[in-house]
Structure formats: structure tokens, C-alpha cells
Image 1 (tube, rainbow, N blue to C red):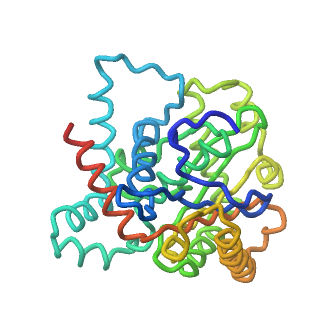
Image 2 (cartoon, rainbow, N blue to C red):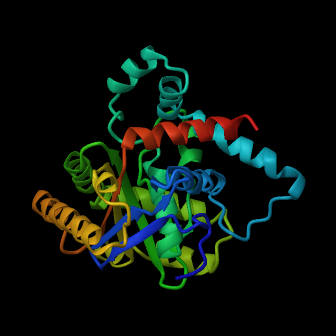
Amino acid sequence: MAERIFDKKNVILLKINEDELNSFLVDMDIGDDGKPKYRLDDFTRAIINTIPEYVFAEYEGADIPQNDSVEKIREAAHCIYKIKDFELMKRWCVDNDMNAYVELTNSSTAKRGEFGELLLHLILREFKQTIPLISKVYFKDSANVPAHGFDAVHISANEKILWLGESKLYDDSKEGIKALVEDLNEHINTDYLNEQFVIIKKNLENNSIPNREEWIDIITNCNKLSDKLDIINIPMLCTYTHDIYKKYSDMNASDAVAYHELNVRELKRYFDKQNKMPLKDRVNIILMLFPVNDKNELVINLHRRLWHMQNI
């Protein structure tokens, strides 16, 4: 495992690491009162720390002058809040604006999970050693409408793999999985992938990732659907509320591990049953399952951190 980039306190535990299934848990600690402590603050800090890179699609090594670093962070936070869903969530969670809550619950994207993309970005960077290729925020903000496309577009520089990811943040795990399967059916087809490859190629021509010319050549010559599928991984992250953190104080204890594995294996079977996509046997799909203590608690804490980040 390479050195952590954002999760420097190692708060995220990788529990199952298989070709088609990854699972994660938030590590526990002991509070000042001697009671078990769910590491919400460390977890949300790691997620929030990804925002500048997530917004600007810059990876480690990109130079930000020291006297510009605070402004760069503030700008990144402002970019997030230009997106309608984030702005609605801020008004509801931070300002207690019930009108925003009503608007959010009636929105077609209300179930997507506004911070799911950030967590997916974090997991890909920390555990798959990928490099971000495209800024989703740029496409959302520039068009002033929700972006169409994958929630994450990353590459593995050494393996020549393109990671096209989807994410959902739900209270109910099975509802999140069903939503992921819907995305899978909408996105894995010739027309959609052709469109995405055009966007990716344009972005490659304007950034400085390692082996840029080689990547441009690969994308340019990927004309057949079969060629595209050969270089793609599809990580699908479902983050959901679960009671494991209330039942156990040590996520590495054998009983907690067994309880977690029972949960994620059952959800993997559910995913496989729901997934009837014709190309499923040709696509390298990695289901990523991440139970958290409380999805709403996580979202509210993230909004508070983001709000402060925007106003530093």
C-alpha cells in the first residue's frame, strides 16, 4: 500500500479486497470519556481534503504557490456550492431552511448523495492509486446544469486502465444498489461510451498527466466497443447507514469482521441478482460497499466543514 494522500490518519479500513468486491469501514477509537468513539471527524476531514484536487482535477505534484494556497482552497469550496444540489443541502443542513428541504426531496437527484463522488474520489486515490483525469465540477459549473457522465474519471498510469466510477449515498443499502444498477444500464453502451471517450480525449489534450501522448493514442484508437471495455474498470460505490458501529467497538475484532462480511456478501448477491445488463460479463465491475454510522450525520458534518472551508 502506497502512502496515504488524504486519509493520513488511516481512518478508512479496507476489509474485503477482491476482484469484484471491495468493502470498507470507518475505524473506531476511544473517546476522552473512555467510551468507544466513531471517528466521524477524521473521516469527514479526509473526504473534505480531496476537494481542491476533485475540483481542479490536479493530482499530487501539481504546484500551488504558498501564497495562493488558501485562495485555491476557498475557490474549490465555492465551486462545490455553485452546484444546485450542494447549495440546497447547505441551506437545509446548515441554515435549517425547510423550503430547501422540500425542494431537495422533490428533486430528481435527491437520492444520489451529494458527497458520494468525493468519497469515491478518495477511495480510488487511496486504495487504487489512480490519478484524476476530469473535473466533474468543471463540467457542471460551466454548463450551469447537472453534468452527464460518470461520477469519477481516473486512470491507473502504470496499468493503462481507465476508471469510470459511479457512487450513491443512501440510508437504505439496497435502494442505493438498485440506483447503481440503473446507472450501469444507462452508461455501459456504445453511444454513451463513445461520448465519454470524446470528452476524455479533449481533456487529455489539455492536461499534463504522466504518459499523456500514449493515453491520447490509446483513446484515439479505441474505436470498437470491445476495445473500450478491455481498458475500463467500473468501480460502483454504495455508502449506506448500518448498525455495525453501534454493535461493536473494534472493527478488527473477529465478531465485527464476521458481521460486516455477512452484510456485504448478502448485498453483493443482491447486486448480482439485480444486474441484468447484457454486457455484464464483458465489463470489469467492482462493487464497493461502505457502511457508515448514519448517512445524514455524515452529510451534515461534511456540509459544515465545506461551509467553513468556503469562508476561510
